[in-house]
Amino acid sequence: MRPAPEDVRTVVCAGTGVIGGGWVAYFLARGYDVVAWDPAAGAEERLRHLVDAAWPALTELGLADGADRARLAYEPDLAAACGRADFVQESAPEDLDLKRRLLADIDAVTPEGVVVSSSTSGYGMTDMQTLCTNPGRTVVGHPFNPPYLIPLVEVVGGEQTDADVVSWTADFFRLAGKSVITMDREVPGFIANRLQEALWREALHMVAAGEATVEQIDLSITDGPGLRWPVHGPMLTFHLAGGQGGMAHMLDHFGPSLLSPWTRLVAAELTPELRDAVVDGCDREAAGRSIDDLVAERDRGVIAVLRALGRA
Image 1: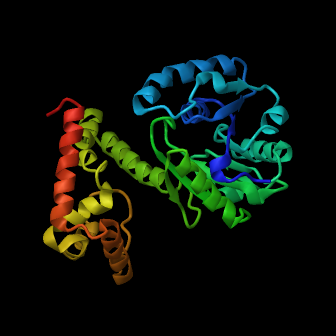
Image 2: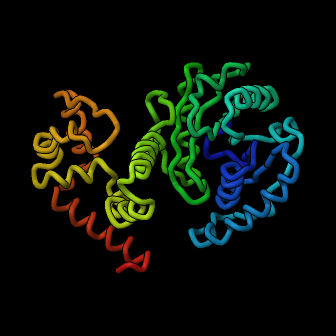
């Protein structure tokens, strides 16, 4: 039987590299018992080193009641590890065949109903759950590096994933202290990686063409839009760029610039439907906050970031 999200006590982390090890550190800091499995030689030593290195940051953020590195157990046998699970987080290398086989192996030895989540950074669960006997309990729980520090997790199921497993997983991660996006549909790379990849590709184009240096590109973000994104993100940032008219004015006034050669990406066609969807989304996210409210909120946040970095 599947425990309620709030009743999870033991988390199994299958795969303990940079991502899996980060998960181990995070779950320990949140007060869970953690059983780790990884077949690689020397994996336990590397894992314990990673946890020790992450612990000062986790301590500064605030440890949950009962948080203790001594609650980590390393188990070399997959069946023995998964047999103790209330929840499984798989973090194997990004190899589709490996993911398929490992998820099937985990499914075969994990108690009935227990959710099996994957840290994959790009594969859809539809493609990974093909060999599982019980694919309904498999779901993507995509973190960001390092998982012990970055709050976001993107949750999305595959075609055979049970709907209640998606909602259960989102609830579990929220209870564990994560910020969760529950995606409505699968898309390769999910949301944040696709946005990150677009910026990365354009940066490589500019370096290759001699249009910008690495240092200029980094400074353009750290001292430019990157200072606003922790506060509002790109959509509300452009909402404010429209002044008192908000996103509607922004799209109507600057929409034609989507066709300007400012990026190598093909621009989405700014249809009335797309315009209305973006405007309505900004209104929902603003949740009653006026443009003036959002401007003040942004300014406070940017000042806080600058001061935290010693740059103001």
